[in-house]
Length: 141
Image (cartoon, rainbow, N blue to C red):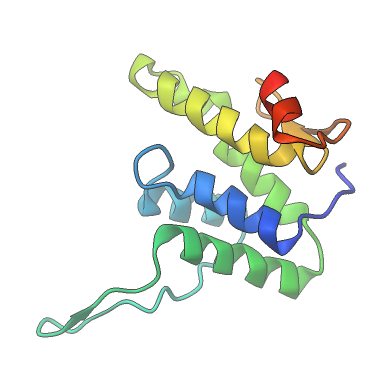
């Protein structure tokens, strides 16, 4: 069980990695992962009545709102950490065409998490580690 909390800046950085346009998950994938983690999907503000279309929040902002909503409701990071483990479960990336995406997301996620004192192992499990203090230290690890 992980006993560390993420602050706003750390959570935003994590959402930036997971919701990145090119290297991250699609909104459909994020929605599925959130549902599997029992995290409520919040409204992204988009609107389409057939005549008018209004763009809502981008994926990063929407994911952040979903995770913050869960934290505020449960007063816990438990489901957020479960979401990370589900998202980075290697079984979802066994196809050769998905391997590079997995490596990229895992590496970038761990760069954020190392500054908190966490890491996602190659097995997809979250564990506590000694926190990195600088970006150079993050890069060395």
